[in-house]
Image 1: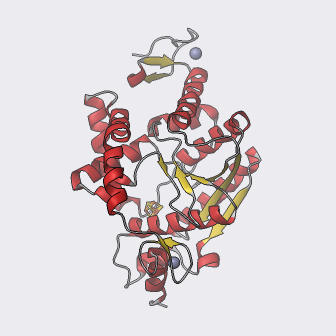
Image 2: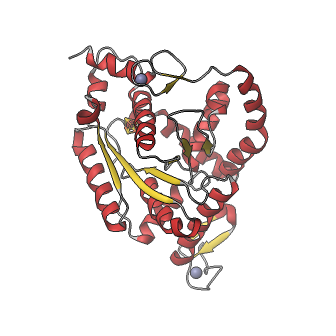
Image 3: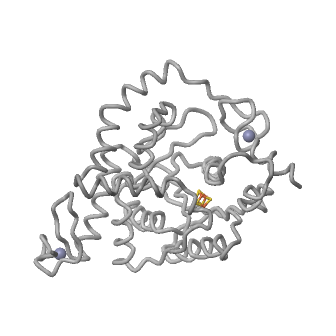
Amino acid sequence: MLKQCKLCGEPASVRVPYARLSLCPKHFTEYVERHVRNTIKRYKLIKSGDRVVLAISGGKDSLALLHILNNLRGEVGFELSALNIDLGIRKDDYSLKAVQISEKYCRELGVELAKVDMKRDFGFTIDEVFSSNHVRRPICSSCGVIKRYVTNKVAVELGANSLATGHNLDDESAVLLSNYVKADIDLLVRSGPMLPSRGERMVSRIKPLYETSEKETTLYNFFKGIQHLEQKCPYASGASTLRLKEVVNALEEEWVGSKIALVRSFNKKIKPILAEHYSKNSKDIDLCEACGYPTSTKICSFCRLKKSVSKNC
Ligand code: SF4
Ligand code: ZN
Ligand code: ZN
């Protein structure tokens, strides 16, 4: 049962079990902001003078993060702009609504927004990847290739040194668990709150919501009145991460604090050992012969995907 806010004595609206806190809306939103600030500090994600581009999808996590980073930029001393990709998902006007809501919120906050339209700028869309007979990957895996490539390319072109994403604690603990089960060392070593640049034409990727849960960003937006896209991507039902999130949340119910414990212990104890092993065995990063962006193969996955889709035309 909810009691009084631990900080001001007003009726509490939220219970944060792992912190053993009951909080009113005002103190809950401040708690989330402090938590994100501490994550940035703990993992040294942003420093004064950085140029950060935040990839926004219009969803709850990226818009909550946009709000928080926008308030932090003066205090920490970094530049912030946003980036949105129109993936070209037409069912239920999904991409159209995602673009509109992203534009609206950037306008409200006065944050500069770089807009990418997959069809206009790269010649193909996610819908075309899905209906292509030549693409073998699951759709979300192809979408991941596209988003990683495009966000990096645009961030490089904008002269940024960091690309921030709205991946939250639920996403990260679920993927971590899956990679542990599969013992996928390559993916494990590349997970974490920061993936530093590995060379030319590659920015560092940072996740300031690494220790903030999905429930926290949802409530944060609710209390702050931030409108986000509530509709799920029409391709999301097949996403295996949804099922994995149910598993980590079941674990959290049984063992309060397990999601944070999972990501913290990984970063502190496991990742350094893996990173040492990986640095001796990792493939060299080169530049793609077709587009000139980083890859460990002759032609990067994005260019190969684009070629497969174009075979249908
Ligand atoms: Fe892309 Fe899959 Fe997410 Fe839809 S659910 S935006 S296809 S990764
Ligand atoms: Zn309070
Ligand atoms: Zn390429």
